[in-house]
Image (cartoon, rainbow, N blue to C red; front, side):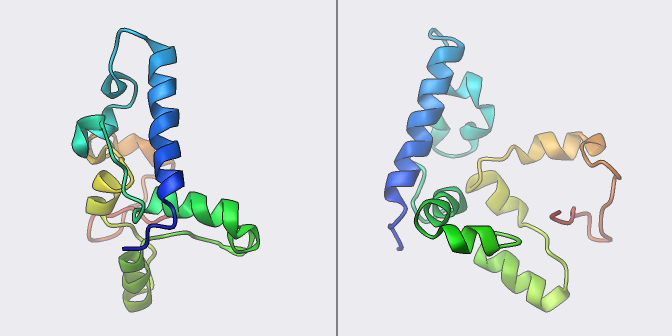
Length: 126
């Protein structure tokens, strides 16, 4: 496992916990960030191998790569792009590794500005 972004993973959890405590000291981190319930019930850890810490690592340690990048994505999403020509994200990765509430997205079709969906039901990354 590539753990170069371990410090960034810890930073994400520290910021989330601090923000949650400021929002409401008597409430849990899950009240502030309900999407974290998908993984470790909001207590972390966030793995250094996941996209968010890796993206932070790139931004902090390789700023020219960050500036030149059009998209930062998971390897399997890039492989799908090369195979299909469509840049879409895996809903499993979005929920588990990006802490994105996939159920909420499915319930809010109006979140997409133009409502664009491909024939398989996914939304292109923009």
